[in-house]
Image (cartoon, rainbow, N blue to C red; front, side, top):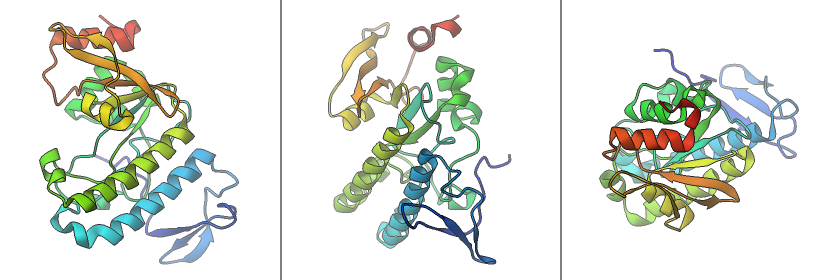
Amino acid sequence: MRSLYRHVGKIDLEYAAGAKGMVERDVNDGLRPSPRTASNMSDAEIVCRKIYEETRSCYDKLKPALGSAALGFRILYGPPMVRAPYMFLGFQPGGRQDESDEGQHDGWPDQSWHANASSPLANHLRAVFGIETVKHTGLNMVFFRAPNMKAWDSIPSTLRRELEQFSLERAQRIVEVLEPQHLVVIGLRTFKQLTNTNGETALLGQRCNRLVVKGEFGGIPTSGIVHLSGARVSRQDREKLKEHFNPTISS
């Protein structure tokens, strides 16, 4: 399947005078004007491109210390859409090998991962939120890959906290510049880590378990949702989630 990522080649993005007159440096051609200069890029794109640059630099610096845990990073799961109906935010991208050759270190995908991926989580999100997820984007609280929480927790604590703090600060910058109408945090534990609260219960399941909590992050209405691929969610509870978030598609 064709990668959704922009294969922009090996380029360095140079920013001068607040990103005015941005140029690309192609390793084969030298300096050349960027097709997306500061004059025709949105503020959101400029901020997001800068974050990709900072993350590449951070990863390259810390990769030797990470050793076998250096599995690359992933930031945006779709184009940087401003005022999207929903932005999905998870804890961390999974992965068992460095996938930087897929273009994920260079920029965001041309299409929404949530609308196109065939993974269980993407399928569940489409079922709950509808096919309009094509108009949504997403990211994670931690940019750097790990196959699971056990593997992530095995990284030395000082290094792990540095990566988590680096990611969180930049995830907040992305949320601020994209200004989603609603932030949906995947996983109640992740919601607590992000907002430092348990949230207010917004929806209970058949067994009185919390399916959705609500709060805010950076002034944006925020919902925490039970992890749809990491928890046992009954068919009845999935219907309740669908009705809660998108009653127009509820069966």
